[in-house]
Length: 209
Image (cartoon, rainbow, N blue to C red):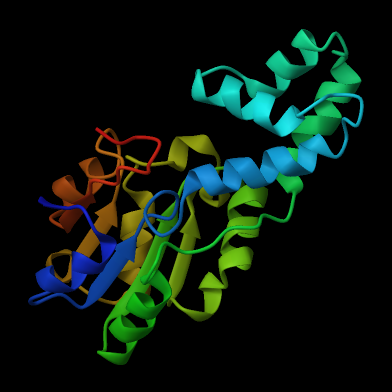
């Protein structure tokens, strides 16, 4: 496994590679940006709360359930309001952007003949909203949201999504390379299958080590 600190350095490690597969969250864009976008949408439901977004972010940074904690701390908790806030967060149209240079990187790689894929975990509605906001469908050849394969048991490190990607793009495992940021789960399946891998050590990421 190769380690990099900048996603743009991927190009340096593509000898004998035909397919480049990327993780999505904290690899191509900042997951924190998505979280803040969601909290901003939730804040609009809570006009009675002073600085709700800042308070939710503070709870989030402390590793707490931000929406629950905010509603409890403001003495406005109810299951109905909680569910309304959660659904607003999960189904909001996010305002997010690629990390600097990522869009051009994807365009350049395709121009150079590489096939590109995305394998991402998470709730289907949220991941689809991110993909739409970034315009990813027009930039890559195949996107797999693992939850769509049959539920959370198909999330990484399950090997199924990698096998589907291989078959769809019609290459050998040794001609594939996977780029991700989460050392705890991203590289287990690639290592077993013989897929080369690049660990993006993203200081901005939620799973940075």
